[in-house]
Length: 250
Length: 266
Ligand SMILES: Nc1ncnc2c1ncn2[C@@H]1O[C@H](COP(=O)(O)OP(=O)(O)OP(=O)(O)O)[C@@H](O)[C@H]1O
Ligand SMILES: [Mg+2]
Image 1 (tube, rainbow over the protein chains, first blue to last red):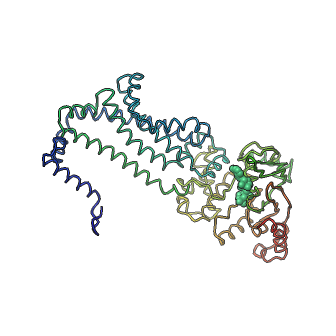
Image 2: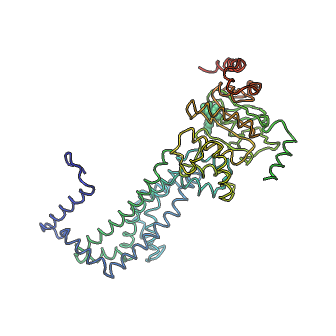
Image 3: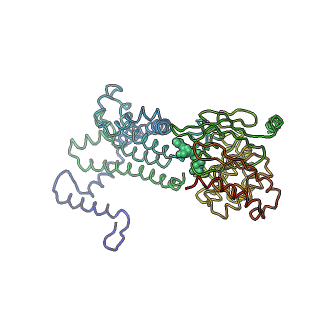
């Protein structure tokens, strides 16, 4: 951030917003926003409790499994669509529909199909993340230099080798970009799943805190969740930058 | 290795003259007739250039010989056998190099062998040889984006040489490098043709380049294209390389080709 000619250190905008939060909280304007200092104090008191740790592990479990399936299904499907006209024409309309569909409305259907347990929550998470991962992998493959494909063919690459030695790597910048956005959507998916399907994990905590008007606790858990999503997305952005040097020369 | 060599020896004794023969090749892209009834023979151990105006189908023909494109009709014979796809007896050098940007020079050069399943130490030993043969020793661990255009094409050339294919297909390999590098490449190419005992098929836009490096030049005319003329500047290659460009015969051939092509250039 820059004020006049002075370059402020990174994250200063966060400090500013934190300050505003504190002032609004102290002014007692609304019970909904307790002062930031109080929220942070609550955060540290909550973080070690068994309830929080169970919620964290349940959420992380559903989140990582959901993202895992979104990646191992989404990336190959996207690459297949980028390579194969027929597959593309068959699947693209569906991918586009699901990308913009209000997936929350599908959750009751999933509950009927897969029950009220962890399985449905994981599937919800996958459904939130997978479409953008497919589309990005597809876009990555679409822009592969034709010569690379011809090169692989002329050296008699097997489809297996072409996939693992050329397509995945050539599309890597786009694939990572898709995964980064997919992960952010997966956070949404896992919480919505936990709220709607069975009240477990962070969803249960949100439910508990908000129905008891424990706003300090509510915000504390939300901050933890944001911080984790932010960390994962920054890690992926870092990997993306690492491979972007070759995006121009493919 | 020795088995494949003797197999090549046998094939060579069947048809010593021509490594590659194309017969009555037609190629349509939808309504566009790119090649029509094109027949051409490529003498073994020599360099044949395909020369012609832009869009006349040179790349198309080269890719058909490589097995990367299916002809609409007609056939291609390599070492006495009809082809139906890419094969280990042909290697391609790409105009835009087609290197893996995420792989080192070493891995790029060895990549053809890697795809053939050769163990790492073995293929890297072979690659190392060709890396130094093309003058890139010391750059084994560099990445393509750290190299100049000329050096990148040397990597592409080393990769094609290292799979030891008897036919080398080159699509305007020097068009993306600067003029001085290009001249050096042309000289090196003459050396390769002399020493490597391979058959080269070389696409170029440049009349001078074609006359300088070729044993045989096939002139293609615009769509639907066929061979209009075959010129053999072979006699030039008995002479001193450094004097070729001043040789009256060289200049005559350049003029002659320009005379037949100029009417197709607006
Ligand atoms: N995939 C394709 N689809 C449709 N038409 C094509 C395709 N590839 C090539 N053509 C057409 O076929 C003709 C021959 O193309 P080709 O690339 O073989 O020419 P070229 O001699 O290599 O040209 P240049 O010297 O510009 O490289 C051109 O007119 C081109 O427009
Ligand atoms: Mg061309």
